[in-house]
Length: 116
Image (cartoon, rainbow, N blue to C red; front, top):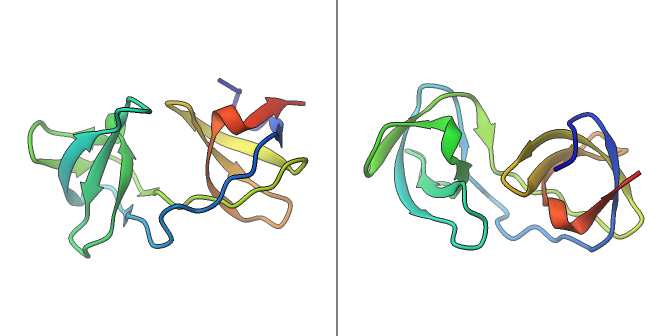
């Protein structure tokens, strides 16, 4: 996995799959669903406002159908195209939180990138 605050180049396009994903603040309670079979380490969660999305398991405290979120988090994805260069801000379970040249931030799959 790439080191945070490193530049990477996009190899494969990524389109936003969930246009209005979960956004939660530390201390919020969420309903916890299934774990992602393709990318272990992520749980499908639903916030009180009805928004849903994948949340890294290490940001959840509690067992069972409800958990408390340990830090502010947004599941917002970023649309990227091949050849684009982005800065990695965070890496979790085969996904990268990146910032593009326009200052937009979002999650993309790590397997769509290559180090510079």
